[in-house]
Image (tube, rainbow, N blue to C red):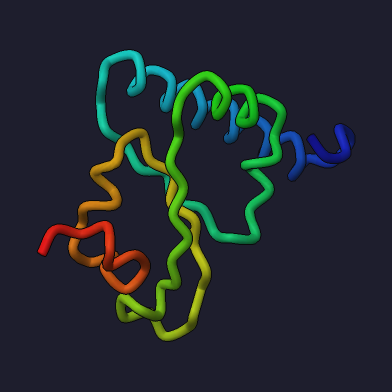
Length: 101
């Protein structure tokens, strides 16, 4: 993805590939994981990430770090292998109807 002559594009692709390998290992072992990415990240558009999403049921949650004490809004995407992410009490402002009373 990106300009192959660009060092930063090559590094981004390498880091994406390594992250996906780790996520695949976790998935194969049944390990619950969460990947945190800034909302400006292009990772979800990477060809291999798209293939990974189609292979498994990856969940995505958009949050704002300011809601959890950050000085700036910092929109963030969380990708998770399990629904446990939606059961965490700290995310109640985003989907209160999903949480147990």
